[in-house]
Length: 205
Image 1 (cartoon, rainbow, N blue to C red):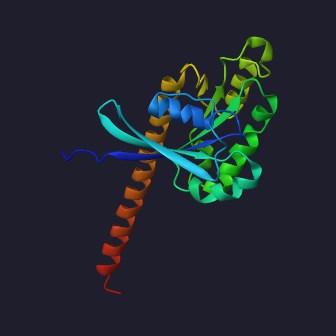
Image 2 (image 1 turned 120 degrees about the vertical axis):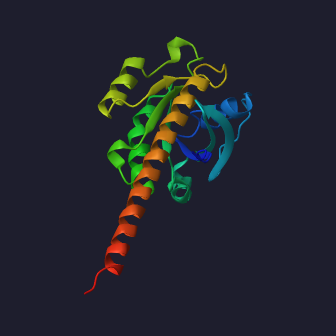
Image 3 (image 1 turned 90 degrees about the vertical axis):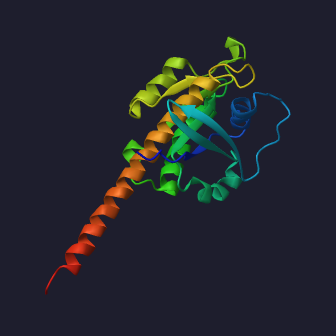
């Protein structure tokens, strides 16, 4: 049996400017944190290889700009995504309220084959900030995720590396499942087309 090809998984990370998208990526990929990040202009990406059970995968993490004036630049980057991560700051209620806007925008621009079942993962970041600054209760976020089909939800601190590894493992697994489902659909479509071609060639009409 031939070994399965190494998977390249494209993951888009969305959310308002300042919620910590770049910091989460840097913590996961490079195990470092700095408070000196500049706002992302357009889009940037990092890659990381990891093993999921017996499968080697390469995660390609796309960090798109959170500022509205740059959103139009993200359209091309959404295409071909295997998973979308929605990030908000637990200390910023507005960043939580706009998750739905980011989710809808992604589905419109990425136009996945099966939007109802496309994998999203929600991250509530900056839990290292003192509780008295928190504006979004954990239960409220969990209720939102439940209303969208039980989306995976993690609370993270990019600064203190809390929950980051666990979150990105689930992100990677969801992305891999999406990619394998897509491959199956394409293989099935190819098989149908081959069968149709053979039928036409064998037709004496």
